[in-house]
Amino acid sequence: MDISVVVPLYNEAESLPELVAWIERVMKENRFTYEILMVNDGSTDDSWQVITRLHEQNPCVKGVCFRRNYGKSPALNTGFARTQGDVVITMDADLQDSPDEIPELYRMIKEEGYDLVSGWKKKRYDPLSKTLPTKLFNATARRVSGISNLHDFNCGLKAYRSEVVKHIEVYGDMHRYVPYLAKIAGFDKIGEKVVHHRARKYGVSKFGLDRFVNGYLDLLTLWFQAKFGVKPMHFFGLLGSLMFFIGFVAVIVVGAHKLYNMWAGNAYTLVTNSPYFYLALTAMILGTQLFLTGFLGELITRNSPSRNHYEISEEID
Image (tube, rainbow, N blue to C red; front, top):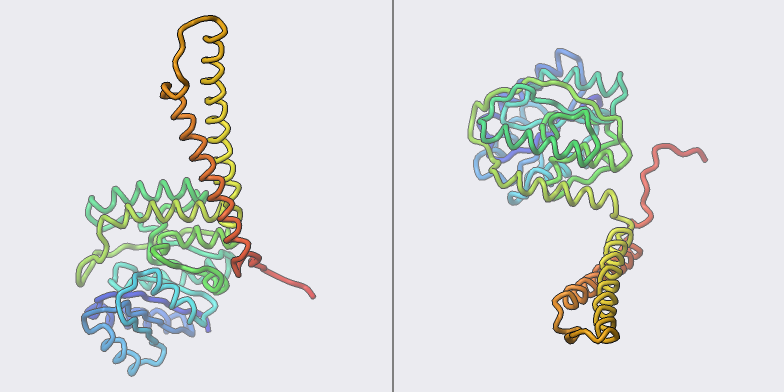
């Protein structure tokens, strides 16, 4: 099979027939073998009934229905596990992504050898309250992930080599960082294509401003996992040792200062009367706790069933 199109959706019953008809036309014009895998993320409208009807009309339309709303990342991960195509295309169900982009995305994967091609909505039809935070978000993601050539991490329109979606796990709200997940898994040939962004035709946006706050927290999580996921002691142990050392030196300085005043016959006070003593003591306690956190993290990592799981691209036996 040439292409699997994965469409996560939530309350998009109105747009589904038009979207499927559009995808079908593009596939037929380019003579692609294909499947359209729609993941209904607990919709409360008639989305699942529409998907069922579309499947009856065209067996290439397949569906998965969640019992409740889990989010876009679980929907994508579920869809990825079921794909059969050589190239996997993801797009949103709101008709803001154009299926006419599919042939070029397919070509970039098959002929130019990209692992992943992400769409870039260079000209957007979103309100200013959404576009400005998006630009800041993308600038931060480029800096942290090291994928400097991507302008739009969160674009729903992406193309993947099949091997990529089978080796990444999209969970929580990590759909915003699929290129970063792919890079962490060793798929670093990541490209970008300017795609047409259309104004929403039906319904309303399902995303609020809270996604930007959560997005930065998820980015921090990914960065930490990529750097220290299998070696937490390198982070917590180093930080803890540094804090303990600073606190220990500070205690010595406070004690030495008192001893010097005693030797010189100067007025002096108890060490416990100095605020610096308590600051130093706090630093030592925090340093010990951070070190123990790293140690416990190492124990957990050592007992993880995936502690020695490494992505292998080829093998000769």
